[in-house]
Image 1 (tube, rainbow, N blue to C red):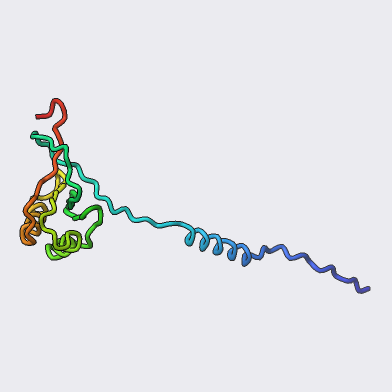
Image 2: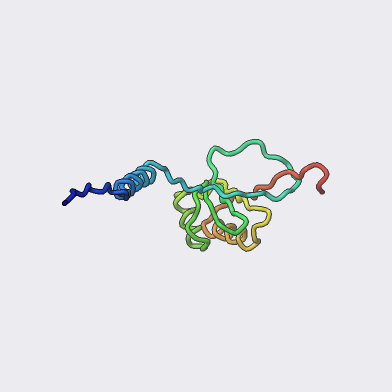
Length: 142
């Protein structure tokens, strides 16, 4: 006697639709996520005692120097640490006005060389009003 065999049910799981859904989710999150790059440098100013200036000029240029010597002009980071790059950025920000005040905000741990390079760039371009930002010392610290 010949019996008919029942077809066996396929016990495997097809992973192709699952992989498609995972890739679609990945693409969705990659497209919908905003990638921001922080351009602010973290600076800890050196401490100094002196006369506090309350009035800030209406327009000034700030050169920020981070601990590792990276430069930022008015919050925009520069691509490298070369003198020419710093001078080009200062020219672009200041235009033809060399009487605009220039403030150097250097981290307390920044190298002396980085500060001198910023001062040299300002001097070569003809900036005459240059100041260095500091903070008042904390109570108990001489």
